[in-house]
Length: 387
Image 1 (cartoon, rainbow, N blue to C red):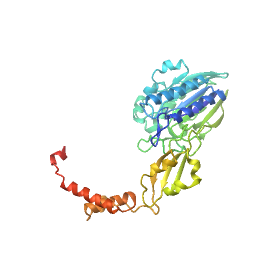
Image 2 (cartoon, one colour):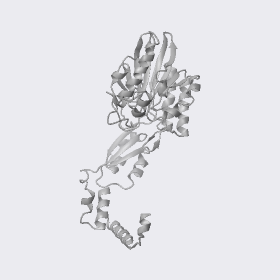
Image 3 (cartoon, rainbow, N blue to C red):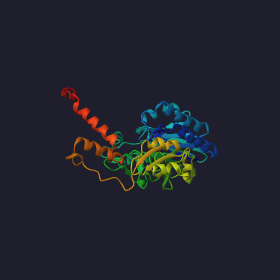
Image 4 (tube, rainbow, N blue to C red):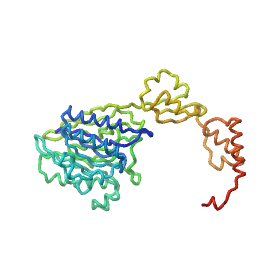
């Protein structure tokens, strides 16, 4: 049996305010091409199909189109929810979907009820462990003494092993789980699942399985031959510099026979730039960044006016802008230090200077004086302020 392991689609997510649905549709369509080209039997999605619990209608359209393409390409689908999904919404109509080859394992009471799929060597049991929020999960699992993610996942895997033991020799096992396993490396785009400062789960919790398809971390990672993160199909932060990919997993009669990493297309690459605005706009070396999502750090000593508008005139996909003046900004003052012994005008002038790295011009100073005088003349009703 050949599996394709993917996760963390986050359909509906934006990238610094930029809509990614078209990019997500493109890369998810490529998964269906891989299924057909590589003769994949089963696609496993280890959580975070959507980016939010209540996805938009357009996000649902993109996700359901992707699932339909994968099914039409010839693969059965096994999916479990992540911490971004609503398990109840994702699992709606699960019993009906199963008849069409879409197997949704979204509830705690189904953890030990595997999806059983057959190949020439017999059955393979796919166990879906939905993301388990420790406090409610430990009660639902009947282990109130369990602590943190390790405690609830240990109980979930106990149930998996107990069921697997009843199925006799030769039944191979695949587990889908959405968790932060020790040894994995995070990025800037994962939402923390820390509880009391402890979110990591030791890999030994999953010992004894033929393959464990992990979700949550967005970079492709191998923690052990049988224990891997596929990562997200798109980059969701500028910290994600590793090429996105999926794992293609082969099972033979004895279990795990091999795993290959298959890289995914990049609809729009990421890039970063640093320097003074005028230099970045004029340097011909940056011509090849025209089509990239771009993060720019400006080092001008004075904050440039309308910097993003000017950047987008040359780099239409600039999405993130920072200002770090050469030499660094002055040490930040506490509020009491910033206002002590200063007039209202001096406070306003210092605020403007701190924000952009240059003192106000005479015209700006005159406007500040005018504004402060107008505020001083205004009749203020104390009761209106309190309301």
